[in-house]
Image (cartoon, rainbow, N blue to C red; front, side, top):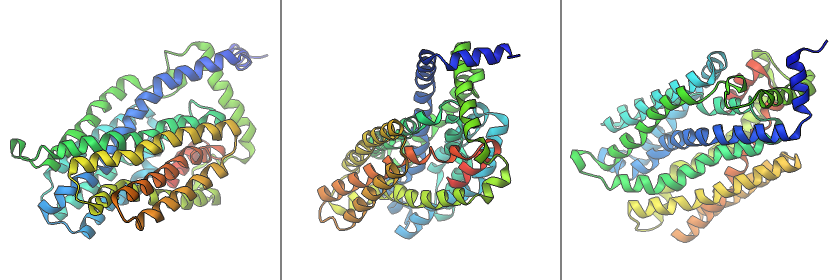
Length: 386
Protein backbone atom coordinates (compact mmCIF):
# COMPACT_ATOMS: atom_id res chain seq x y z
CA UNK A 1 0.00 0.00 0.00
CA UNK A 2 1.33 3.42 -0.91
CA UNK A 3 1.91 5.76 2.02
CA UNK A 4 0.11 9.08 2.22
CA UNK A 5 3.45 10.86 1.80
CA UNK A 6 4.26 8.74 -1.23
CA UNK A 7 0.88 9.54 -2.74
CA UNK A 8 1.47 13.27 -2.35
CA UNK A 9 4.90 12.94 -3.96
CA UNK A 10 3.56 10.91 -6.86
CA UNK A 11 0.74 13.35 -7.50
CA UNK A 12 3.07 16.33 -7.23
CA UNK A 13 5.55 14.84 -9.66
CA UNK A 14 2.79 14.52 -12.27
CA UNK A 15 1.83 18.19 -11.95
CA UNK A 16 4.14 20.40 -14.06
CA UNK A 17 2.64 23.55 -12.58
CA UNK A 18 3.72 22.44 -9.10
CA UNK A 19 7.31 22.01 -10.30
CA UNK A 20 7.39 25.42 -11.95
CA UNK A 21 5.99 26.99 -8.81
CA UNK A 22 8.40 25.11 -6.51
CA UNK A 23 11.55 25.95 -8.46
CA UNK A 24 10.40 29.54 -8.94
CA UNK A 25 10.04 29.98 -5.19
CA UNK A 26 13.39 28.34 -4.51
CA UNK A 27 15.10 30.65 -6.99
CA UNK A 28 13.48 33.75 -5.52
CA UNK A 29 14.10 32.82 -1.88
CA UNK A 30 17.54 31.19 -1.97
CA UNK A 31 19.55 32.34 -4.98
CA UNK A 32 19.55 36.08 -4.13
CA UNK A 33 20.86 35.36 -0.62
CA UNK A 34 23.40 32.81 -1.86
CA UNK A 35 24.43 35.29 -4.54
CA UNK A 36 25.08 38.03 -1.97
CA UNK A 37 27.01 35.61 0.27
CA UNK A 38 29.28 34.65 -2.61
CA UNK A 39 29.78 38.27 -3.67
CA UNK A 40 31.11 39.03 -0.19
CA UNK A 41 33.12 35.80 -0.13
CA UNK A 42 34.82 36.46 -3.45
CA UNK A 43 35.37 40.13 -2.66
CA UNK A 44 37.07 39.27 0.63
CA UNK A 45 39.22 36.71 -1.14
CA UNK A 46 40.54 38.88 -3.99
CA UNK A 47 40.40 42.39 -2.52
CA UNK A 48 44.03 41.81 -1.63
CA UNK A 49 44.70 42.48 -5.32
CA UNK A 50 43.40 46.04 -4.94
CA UNK A 51 44.97 46.52 -1.51
CA UNK A 52 48.31 45.59 -3.07
CA UNK A 53 48.19 48.75 -5.21
CA UNK A 54 49.28 50.72 -2.13
CA UNK A 55 49.93 48.09 0.56
CA UNK A 56 52.91 46.59 -1.25
CA UNK A 57 54.64 49.95 -1.34
CA UNK A 58 53.67 50.89 2.24
CA UNK A 59 54.96 47.62 3.70
CA UNK A 60 57.83 47.02 1.27
CA UNK A 61 56.43 43.80 -0.27
CA UNK A 62 58.02 42.58 -3.49
CA UNK A 63 55.85 41.10 -6.25
CA UNK A 64 57.08 37.64 -5.25
CA UNK A 65 56.23 38.17 -1.56
CA UNK A 66 52.76 39.42 -2.50
CA UNK A 67 52.23 36.43 -4.78
CA UNK A 68 53.12 34.00 -1.98
CA UNK A 69 50.75 35.77 0.42
CA UNK A 70 47.94 35.83 -2.13
CA UNK A 71 48.44 32.14 -2.81
CA UNK A 72 49.00 30.84 0.74
CA UNK A 73 45.27 31.32 1.29
CA UNK A 74 44.74 28.20 -0.80
CA UNK A 75 47.06 26.03 1.29
CA UNK A 76 44.83 26.22 4.37
CA UNK A 77 41.74 26.27 2.15
CA UNK A 78 42.89 22.94 0.71
CA UNK A 79 43.73 21.40 4.09
CA UNK A 80 40.36 22.21 5.68
CA UNK A 81 38.07 21.95 2.63
CA UNK A 82 37.01 18.31 2.88
CA UNK A 83 36.55 18.22 6.69
CA UNK A 84 34.48 21.41 6.45
CA UNK A 85 32.12 19.99 3.82
CA UNK A 86 31.67 16.79 5.80
CA UNK A 87 30.75 18.84 8.88
CA UNK A 88 28.24 20.83 6.79
CA UNK A 89 26.54 17.61 5.68
CA UNK A 90 26.34 16.46 9.31
CA UNK A 91 25.21 19.64 11.12
CA UNK A 92 23.30 21.33 8.29
CA UNK A 93 23.98 24.21 5.92
CA UNK A 94 22.42 26.96 8.04
CA UNK A 95 24.68 26.69 11.09
CA UNK A 96 27.86 25.79 9.24
CA UNK A 97 27.63 28.44 6.52
CA UNK A 98 26.91 31.02 9.25
CA UNK A 99 30.03 29.89 11.13
CA UNK A 100 32.14 30.13 8.01
CA UNK A 101 30.95 33.63 7.18
CA UNK A 102 31.35 35.08 10.66
CA UNK A 103 34.87 33.68 11.10
CA UNK A 104 36.09 34.69 7.65
CA UNK A 105 34.60 38.19 8.02
CA UNK A 106 36.48 38.72 11.27
CA UNK A 107 39.76 37.45 9.79
CA UNK A 108 39.30 39.52 6.63
CA UNK A 109 38.74 42.68 8.69
CA UNK A 110 41.80 41.79 10.78
CA UNK A 111 43.91 42.06 7.62
CA UNK A 112 43.99 45.79 8.36
CA UNK A 113 46.45 44.94 11.16
CA UNK A 114 49.11 43.55 8.80
CA UNK A 115 52.46 45.10 9.65
CA UNK A 116 54.92 42.93 7.75
CA UNK A 117 55.37 39.88 5.60
CA UNK A 118 54.90 37.35 8.41
CA UNK A 119 51.60 38.78 9.65
CA UNK A 120 50.46 39.02 6.01
CA UNK A 121 51.17 35.32 5.44
CA UNK A 122 49.60 34.31 8.79
CA UNK A 123 46.33 36.17 8.21
CA UNK A 124 46.02 34.95 4.62
CA UNK A 125 46.50 31.39 5.92
CA UNK A 126 43.82 31.94 8.59
CA UNK A 127 41.46 33.43 5.99
CA UNK A 128 41.73 30.27 3.90
CA UNK A 129 41.04 28.08 6.94
CA UNK A 130 38.03 30.21 7.93
CA UNK A 131 36.47 30.16 4.46
CA UNK A 132 37.24 26.52 3.64
CA UNK A 133 34.09 24.67 2.69
CA UNK A 134 31.97 27.66 1.73
CA UNK A 135 31.93 27.19 -2.04
CA UNK A 136 31.71 23.36 -2.17
CA UNK A 137 29.11 23.60 0.59
CA UNK A 138 27.03 25.90 -1.60
CA UNK A 139 27.38 23.56 -4.59
CA UNK A 140 26.32 20.62 -2.40
CA UNK A 141 23.44 22.70 -1.04
CA UNK A 142 22.14 23.43 -4.54
CA UNK A 143 21.85 19.68 -5.17
CA UNK A 144 19.32 19.55 -2.30
CA UNK A 145 16.96 21.79 -4.28
CA UNK A 146 17.55 21.63 -8.05
CA UNK A 147 17.24 18.57 -10.33
CA UNK A 148 20.06 17.92 -12.79
CA UNK A 149 18.36 19.56 -15.78
CA UNK A 150 18.06 22.85 -13.87
CA UNK A 151 21.42 22.77 -12.13
CA UNK A 152 23.78 24.48 -14.61
CA UNK A 153 21.53 27.54 -14.72
CA UNK A 154 21.24 27.61 -10.91
CA UNK A 155 25.01 27.23 -10.47
CA UNK A 156 25.69 29.90 -13.10
CA UNK A 157 23.23 32.32 -11.46
CA UNK A 158 24.87 31.68 -8.10
CA UNK A 159 28.40 31.98 -9.48
CA UNK A 160 27.74 35.21 -11.35
CA UNK A 161 28.46 36.58 -7.89
CA UNK A 162 32.17 36.27 -8.64
CA UNK A 163 31.73 38.36 -11.76
CA UNK A 164 29.43 40.89 -10.06
CA UNK A 165 31.91 41.10 -7.19
CA UNK A 166 34.41 42.25 -9.81
CA UNK A 167 31.93 44.72 -11.30
CA UNK A 168 31.11 46.39 -7.98
CA UNK A 169 34.28 45.43 -6.12
CA UNK A 170 36.64 47.25 -8.46
CA UNK A 171 35.03 50.69 -8.15
CA UNK A 172 34.27 50.20 -4.42
CA UNK A 173 37.80 49.05 -3.65
CA UNK A 174 39.23 51.88 -5.69
CA UNK A 175 37.08 54.37 -3.76
CA UNK A 176 38.05 52.90 -0.38
CA UNK A 177 41.71 53.27 -1.26
CA UNK A 178 41.01 57.00 -1.57
CA UNK A 179 40.28 57.07 2.19
CA UNK A 180 44.00 57.06 2.86
CA UNK A 181 44.76 59.07 5.99
CA UNK A 182 41.20 59.11 7.40
CA UNK A 183 41.47 58.51 11.18
CA UNK A 184 45.14 57.77 10.65
CA UNK A 185 44.50 54.61 8.62
CA UNK A 186 45.86 53.77 5.17
CA UNK A 187 43.42 53.28 2.32
CA UNK A 188 44.14 49.54 2.14
CA UNK A 189 43.34 49.22 5.86
CA UNK A 190 39.92 50.81 5.32
CA UNK A 191 39.41 48.43 2.39
CA UNK A 192 39.98 45.31 4.50
CA UNK A 193 37.89 46.59 7.41
CA UNK A 194 34.84 47.80 5.47
CA UNK A 195 34.77 44.83 3.09
CA UNK A 196 35.23 42.27 5.89
CA UNK A 197 32.51 43.29 8.34
CA UNK A 198 29.53 42.64 5.99
CA UNK A 199 30.37 38.92 6.09
CA UNK A 200 29.86 38.93 9.87
CA UNK A 201 26.45 40.61 9.51
CA UNK A 202 25.40 38.20 6.77
CA UNK A 203 26.45 35.25 8.92
CA UNK A 204 23.76 36.28 11.40
CA UNK A 205 21.26 36.64 8.53
CA UNK A 206 22.04 33.08 7.40
CA UNK A 207 21.17 31.74 10.87
CA UNK A 208 17.70 33.25 10.58
CA UNK A 209 16.98 32.83 6.87
CA UNK A 210 18.67 29.80 5.29
CA UNK A 211 16.79 26.45 5.62
CA UNK A 212 18.84 23.26 5.76
CA UNK A 213 16.74 21.71 2.99
CA UNK A 214 13.28 21.60 1.38
CA UNK A 215 11.77 19.88 4.44
CA UNK A 216 12.60 23.00 6.51
CA UNK A 217 11.32 25.53 3.95
CA UNK A 218 8.08 26.85 5.44
CA UNK A 219 7.57 29.03 2.39
CA UNK A 220 7.01 25.93 0.21
CA UNK A 221 3.64 24.21 0.14
CA UNK A 222 3.34 20.49 0.95
CA UNK A 223 2.88 19.77 -2.76
CA UNK A 224 5.96 21.80 -3.71
CA UNK A 225 8.14 20.08 -1.12
CA UNK A 226 6.82 16.74 -2.33
CA UNK A 227 7.60 17.62 -5.96
CA UNK A 228 11.20 18.53 -5.19
CA UNK A 229 11.71 15.38 -3.12
CA UNK A 230 10.05 13.15 -5.72
CA UNK A 231 12.06 14.68 -8.58
CA UNK A 232 15.36 14.25 -6.73
CA UNK A 233 14.44 10.72 -5.59
CA UNK A 234 13.66 9.76 -9.18
CA UNK A 235 16.98 11.22 -10.30
CA UNK A 236 18.86 9.33 -7.57
CA UNK A 237 17.11 6.08 -8.48
CA UNK A 238 18.00 6.52 -12.15
CA UNK A 239 21.71 6.89 -11.53
CA UNK A 240 21.84 4.91 -8.28
CA UNK A 241 23.66 1.81 -9.58
CA UNK A 242 26.59 3.89 -10.84
CA UNK A 243 26.72 6.45 -8.04
CA UNK A 244 29.41 6.56 -5.35
CA UNK A 245 27.96 7.02 -1.86
CA UNK A 246 30.74 6.06 0.57
CA UNK A 247 33.46 8.46 1.66
CA UNK A 248 36.28 6.24 0.46
CA UNK A 249 34.62 5.94 -2.97
CA UNK A 250 35.17 9.65 -3.57
CA UNK A 251 38.93 9.33 -2.99
CA UNK A 252 39.16 6.18 -5.10
CA UNK A 253 37.18 7.53 -8.05
CA UNK A 254 39.21 8.25 -11.17
CA UNK A 255 36.46 10.62 -12.35
CA UNK A 256 36.83 12.74 -9.21
CA UNK A 257 40.58 13.09 -9.77
CA UNK A 258 40.06 13.81 -13.47
CA UNK A 259 37.60 16.60 -12.62
CA UNK A 260 40.01 17.93 -9.99
CA UNK A 261 42.74 18.18 -12.63
CA UNK A 262 40.38 19.88 -15.06
CA UNK A 263 39.17 22.31 -12.42
CA UNK A 264 42.76 23.08 -11.43
CA UNK A 265 43.38 24.31 -14.97
CA UNK A 266 40.24 26.45 -14.93
CA UNK A 267 40.97 27.91 -11.49
CA UNK A 268 44.57 28.85 -12.33
CA UNK A 269 43.17 31.03 -15.11
CA UNK A 270 40.26 32.20 -12.94
CA UNK A 271 42.52 33.55 -10.19
CA UNK A 272 45.10 34.72 -12.69
CA UNK A 273 42.48 37.27 -13.68
CA UNK A 274 41.15 37.85 -10.14
CA UNK A 275 44.48 38.45 -8.38
CA UNK A 276 46.45 40.16 -11.12
CA UNK A 277 43.94 42.22 -13.13
CA UNK A 278 44.58 45.43 -11.13
CA UNK A 279 48.34 44.92 -11.41
CA UNK A 280 48.15 44.32 -15.17
CA UNK A 281 46.09 47.46 -15.70
CA UNK A 282 48.44 49.48 -13.51
CA UNK A 283 51.46 48.28 -15.47
CA UNK A 284 49.84 48.99 -18.84
CA UNK A 285 49.42 52.74 -18.30
CA UNK A 286 49.59 55.67 -15.86
CA UNK A 287 46.24 55.10 -14.16
CA UNK A 288 44.98 56.08 -10.73
CA UNK A 289 43.57 53.50 -8.30
CA UNK A 290 39.96 54.61 -8.82
CA UNK A 291 40.32 54.42 -12.63
CA UNK A 292 41.85 50.97 -12.31
CA UNK A 293 38.87 49.97 -10.17
CA UNK A 294 36.41 51.18 -12.80
CA UNK A 295 38.23 49.50 -15.70
CA UNK A 296 38.49 46.26 -13.72
CA UNK A 297 34.71 46.00 -13.79
CA UNK A 298 34.61 45.57 -17.59
CA UNK A 299 35.90 41.94 -17.83
CA UNK A 300 33.63 40.88 -14.97
CA UNK A 301 30.56 42.45 -16.57
CA UNK A 302 31.24 40.48 -19.75
CA UNK A 303 31.69 37.31 -17.68
CA UNK A 304 28.42 37.82 -15.75
CA UNK A 305 26.33 37.94 -18.91
CA UNK A 306 28.13 35.11 -20.69
CA UNK A 307 28.04 32.57 -17.87
CA UNK A 308 24.25 32.82 -17.43
CA UNK A 309 23.70 32.47 -21.17
CA UNK A 310 26.02 29.47 -21.45
CA UNK A 311 24.59 27.79 -18.33
CA UNK A 312 21.01 28.17 -19.56
CA UNK A 313 21.94 26.83 -23.01
CA UNK A 314 23.71 23.85 -21.43
CA UNK A 315 20.58 23.00 -19.39
CA UNK A 316 18.31 23.46 -22.39
CA UNK A 317 20.35 21.13 -24.61
CA UNK A 318 21.50 18.76 -21.87
CA UNK A 319 25.05 18.98 -23.27
CA UNK A 320 27.96 19.59 -20.86
CA UNK A 321 31.33 18.72 -22.43
CA UNK A 322 31.41 21.31 -25.19
CA UNK A 323 29.87 23.92 -22.90
CA UNK A 324 32.99 23.51 -20.77
CA UNK A 325 35.64 22.92 -23.45
CA UNK A 326 34.52 25.76 -25.74
CA UNK A 327 34.52 28.53 -23.10
CA UNK A 328 37.79 27.21 -21.63
CA UNK A 329 39.43 27.52 -25.06
CA UNK A 330 38.10 31.07 -25.45
CA UNK A 331 39.51 31.91 -22.02
CA UNK A 332 42.92 30.50 -22.94
CA UNK A 333 43.04 32.58 -26.12
CA UNK A 334 42.11 35.72 -24.17
CA UNK A 335 44.80 35.15 -21.54
CA UNK A 336 47.45 34.49 -24.20
CA UNK A 337 46.45 37.67 -26.04
CA UNK A 338 46.60 39.73 -22.83
CA UNK A 339 50.25 38.75 -22.35
CA UNK A 340 51.16 40.44 -25.63
CA UNK A 341 48.77 43.42 -25.39
CA UNK A 342 50.58 46.66 -26.34
CA UNK A 343 48.17 49.08 -24.62
CA UNK A 344 45.64 49.39 -21.80
CA UNK A 345 42.71 49.14 -24.23
CA UNK A 346 43.92 45.94 -25.87
CA UNK A 347 44.87 44.42 -22.50
CA UNK A 348 41.38 45.18 -21.20
CA UNK A 349 39.76 43.69 -24.31
CA UNK A 350 41.86 40.52 -24.08
CA UNK A 351 41.16 40.11 -20.37
CA UNK A 352 37.44 40.59 -21.05
CA UNK A 353 37.54 37.72 -23.56
CA UNK A 354 39.49 35.64 -21.05
CA UNK A 355 36.99 36.30 -18.23
CA UNK A 356 34.04 35.67 -20.53
CA UNK A 357 35.37 32.23 -21.43
CA UNK A 358 36.71 31.14 -18.03
CA UNK A 359 33.60 32.09 -16.04
CA UNK A 360 31.23 30.53 -18.63
CA UNK A 361 32.72 27.08 -18.08
CA UNK A 362 31.85 27.04 -14.37
CA UNK A 363 28.08 26.45 -14.46
CA UNK A 364 28.18 23.36 -16.71
CA UNK A 365 31.27 22.05 -14.90
CA UNK A 366 29.59 21.83 -11.50
CA UNK A 367 26.72 19.74 -12.88
CA UNK A 368 29.11 16.80 -13.30
CA UNK A 369 30.04 15.74 -9.74
CA UNK A 370 26.42 15.25 -8.53
CA UNK A 371 25.82 12.94 -11.49
CA UNK A 372 27.88 10.18 -9.88
CA UNK A 373 28.34 11.20 -6.21
CA UNK A 374 25.85 10.87 -3.35
CA UNK A 375 25.81 11.43 0.42
CA UNK A 376 29.23 11.54 2.11
CA UNK A 377 30.92 10.85 -1.24
CA UNK A 378 29.28 13.98 -2.71
CA UNK A 379 30.36 16.13 0.26
CA UNK A 380 33.94 14.87 0.10
CA UNK A 381 34.19 14.61 -3.70
CA UNK A 382 32.93 18.13 -4.43
CA UNK A 383 35.28 19.51 -1.77
CA UNK A 384 38.20 17.48 -3.11
CA UNK A 385 37.61 18.74 -6.65
CA UNK A 386 37.38 22.33 -5.44
